[in-house]
Each structure stands twice: as structure tokens, then as C-alpha cells.
Picture 1: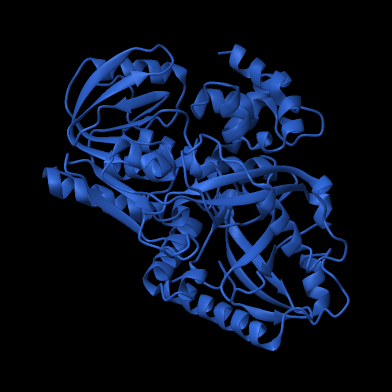
Picture 2: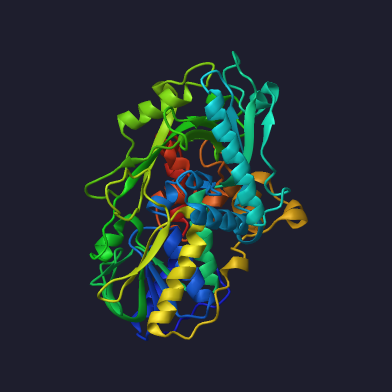
Length: 514
């Protein structure tokens, strides 16, 4: 397979897409064809390309179109899995969290305090369980090699400190709180884009709006959904990373999706929340809901875990029951209850869980599986966002072994993603902090667009913390091809319908400039 793209170039855009589609049509054998542009597929493409394999990723819609943009935007240490005896996945999660925080994506991750307020509704037994869990989290952190300077140890805090973290917590009867630390993403979709761009930098061909049909272990028919044109490709190995749609690519697997729902609020509704306000679910010893600060001056409240049978929609939706459950649970700890009128938006995602029997979806293991179908397609499914890198490594290992590919060892444990920067180098970037948080070392490039074209310095809508330069950068460097790419994935403006409508003209203008 030939390509006119220079290795080392991470920019994804319409021109590169057209160029690489044309090169793909010229023929040649692909080492690894990856189907699916979510966190797992992007991770697989990066791992394979970094090993020197000729890699092509195809995604029917856009990067992070599916479950990968509907997560809690957290980098979990796997604490909840200890409650059900999942020591292995808990340790794996803690290790992968450390890799993200300290090596591969320090620019897109940060430490997030978690506060459980000790109110009369939390009895001595439940308090002891939470404290024991947090101490187990400390053990996981140490076992993963994460320094206390990255994630501090857990501790008991006084009522005044709990209120500084979560000002809207009920004061009456507040006996202080329990504090622990976990990782948080600036945004999950931004992580996926960074991984895909890093894969492109390593030589992978990354093609969105390309559907794979007629998939076998060594071939597929690809259809450009923009033009309708098709081409047949041959691959030494095909990896199915289509997430909740994986059973549509490989009919030999059975999935049992579960739906996780979040509510979106203005940050003002939580009065300057600076931690994850963590609330035990009544009747459960291992499940919590949490409210935490997010991009664009918002707070996300989640998370449900409901079985979601039936056809898989492109965009899942929250149910009334889930909305009521989240409001009722968080209101048990708030001074003034939140109401439906306070909600600015909702989002829901489907977890691609393997069907394993009669347990509730909340109890199904989040361990991933790498399966080979009778046709030779390798499917990687299950798992969770935090462990994407290990899932990708296992899938590529399986492809290398089965197809006897000549490949270098996995490099992704220490391969920084595009934009990765930390410490003094991060502090020295001459750009606004919000740009550094979103783009890392590329913040200066975004700022440079506005300096070169002053009209790009304007907000995309009044009062919105996104500039036209960010839309331009998304089109030129991050593979955004239409308005929904800009509003719903490169930024998360679209989570609030009113904000989305206000920013649509700026999105159209950015695309008109191409």
C-alpha cells in the first residue's frame, strides 16, 4: 500500500482523507484493517502502526461517534470492581490510569478529588465500607506505581473542607467527609481524536465516513458514505472494534448492552463544585452516583446502569426513570434540591458488555475479551475507556500471532499522544490555560490561527468559552468534516441544545472556509 502522506504528520482533514482513500484504491495488502473509530479502534490503530504494521482504520461515522463520547470523562482506578472480587481488572485499571496521567496523555488528564459527605443518612456501617474502599484504592494506587504527588492518599476531612469542595451540600448534620482521588479527562472525545491523530503520525490511514461491509478475516468492502463509491480491500488481519455494533460486524458474538445516563447542569447549579461529589446509592454497598465539574462551565451528574435491549440507536437517550433516579439520589445530600428545570441537557451511552448469563448488567464483568470468529475476524469487546490501551495491545498481539505478522513489540506504554506535555514545559506554554487544557503543546498553534486571522479570536457564540480558531483547528488538524463533528465531538457544545443552536453559524462558517 502506498501513501503520499509523510510519516510524522498528525493532521487529519478532508484533503488527507481524499488522498488516502485514493491511495487505498490503488491496491496493496494491508497488515491490519481496524473497523471502528472509538477509543478501542483508535487505540488498536495506534498500537499496530507503532509496531510498523500497515494499518487502516475505517469508521462509518466520525471519531468517537459512539460510546466513547458518552462516558463519565473519568480515568477510573477500578475501585468499584474490588467489591465484586475483580482484583485483576481493578489493578489493570489503576496501571492504565497511571500511564494516562503521567506518560501518554498528561495534557488531557488531571487528578480529581472525590468527596463523600458524611450526613445522617450515611450510617456507621456504610461509612466504614466507603473508608475501607478508599483505603483499598490507596493500595491500588501504590501497586500501580502512582506517586502521591499525582494522586494523593485518601483521608477524612472536616465539614468546612467538604463544603469548600462541594458548597451546595447540606450543612445540617454534616460530620465532615471522606476524600479520595481519581483521574479525570478534559474530554473523552478529545482523547479519541488525540489517539487517532497519533496513529496517523505513526503511519496509519484513518478514514471516517467509510463503512465496512462483507467483512471476513482477510477482506472487506469499503464504502465512502460521502460519495457512495466502494472498493474491496485485502488485509492480513481484520480487527473488529465497533463497540456496541460489534455483533453487526461479527455475528458470532452476543452483546448485552447497558445504558449509562448523565445529566448536564450549569456549574452555577452546584455553586462552584471543585470535586466529584460522590453519593452512595441507597441499598447498594458498591455503587455511587457523582456530580463533577466539566468543560464549558458545566457539571455532569451520573451514572445509571440499566439494561438496554433491542436495536442499538446511533444516539441513545436518557429515560424519565433514569432522570428521576439521578435527581432523587443527589438531592439526598443537597441543601436545596435540584429540579428538572435546572437540567440543561442529558446524554446516555451504551456499554458493549458480553452476554454472560442472567446477572444484571451492573454485575457483568467489565473485563475485555479478544475473540476470533469462524471467519477469522478478531473482535475486541467489553472493557472500559481507561483500559483502552491494554485492550488494543491484546488485540494486536492476537492479530500478530494468528496472521504471523512481522511486528515490533508494543510501544504504547510510553508513547506520548499528540499534544502531550506536562510540568515546567506545560507551564511555559504562552497560551490561555483553557487552551492548554484542551490542546496541550498544540495550544500555541490554535492561538496562532487567531493571531494570523483576528476574526478567529471571537467566541463561537456570546458567552461561550470556545473560539472560532478552535473550530478552524478542528477542521484543519482534527478531521472534522461537518457541523456535528465540530459541535458534538471536537467540542461538547452540543450537549446543551440551546448552546448548540447558538454556535451553529460559527460551525458553518468554519467549514465554508475549507
